[in-house]
Length: 153
Image 1 (cartoon, rainbow, N blue to C red):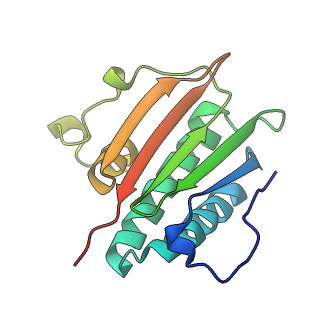
Image 2: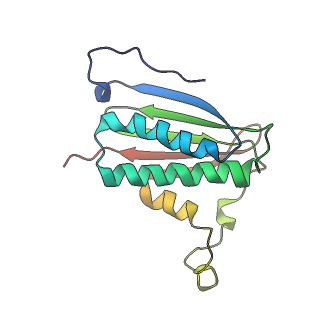
């Protein structure tokens, strides 16, 4: 399901807008979600570096939802909600997995983990976004909320 405002002559960045999309638990959904979020972020005028960081955060979160949350289960979905206001973008990604304890995620900077090829996604999401929160999804699963504020240069 996708919802979008009617096109008009009004500056898009000044309008509040919400996009909601349901994705399959497949890696192809990662690219689609990133593209959707970056389209929503564009009217806010984020620079190339900020858009890149937002894109990485979304990719990492979607991969976690598909691979670790839903475990590629075709019967389970991933939901993306993007809310845009004149000064920020809020991204929520939800899965139907078993959930997890964020405190149990190994420190990717610890010596024994430094050369691992995975395990840095949560750290990157936290570093690249202005706000980051993980919470249980009811009735099951995980919800990640990320916020990026527009900065005036």
